[in-house]
Image (tube, rainbow over all chains, first blue to last red; front, top):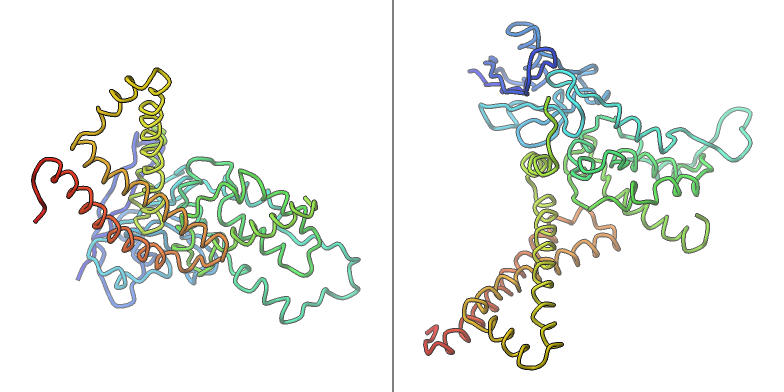
Length: 237
Length: 136
């Protein structure tokens, strides 16, 4: 049995516009979309470009639009798509460099804006900062983000305003705000509580729908709104 | 590659993320624009009163026709959708029930259908009785 992979191709050196190209890939039980792409690369067309690394949904390299939704190609079983036609496109809202490879610079630039590293206020302990189970629980789901940019690609607001921090950066902001070891809560809230941060979100829920790690960025944004509201009210930001 | 304009980008986003959240968001936008158009017309009709009651009566008579009464069914639908979707977003915003957004959407859409069936029947009955007919 064969499956047809319909892939959006674009070579900036040759093509004026992106176009779809079909490939027939032999199907066997357990075939993932990423394995299908590797089959094409190794057997049918060596010019196909895509990103991947771990093949285990850890690195976040292979996020792309597959049959109606942004997904990780490595963890998407072809059988689960219930279709003989697998349509693959690159992430939206980012410039296509070649085929399925996009320029992630705007995504990472937004991520850098929220200063994604611990900034403790207390003096550094001799050995390490300790966290109770309860404190760790507050960042449990949030630390799972693998920066795949599926949420950014799915968010229509990111399309209308590239300066919008985007779901991923806002999840990361809440991750550090909730972290008991971090001491820059108000400074972080000041970074996100503006019209290029939490107030630009239109609560469309696409980010929640597509997150391969089942993080709920919309909920993170709602929590940040609540926290920034209280901080504004008490004059902290 | 040619740069896409904003409308094409929005169309792409809509087709690539065809789910309840996107549908609700797009309908909220469209109904918002329609409401703006309606409010401009409404202000024009009501504003005619500043030129005297004759002008006001003339302007009002133009929209008191069966055609406009039937359009009112659509207007009420637009208002009701914009209203209940706004309430849905407020509920989610204030309670953090983000995972319940699809359930809330379908509950509110069911309420919209029931409300619109009742509204359409009421308006059509009035329009027909004015024209000398009946729904029965």
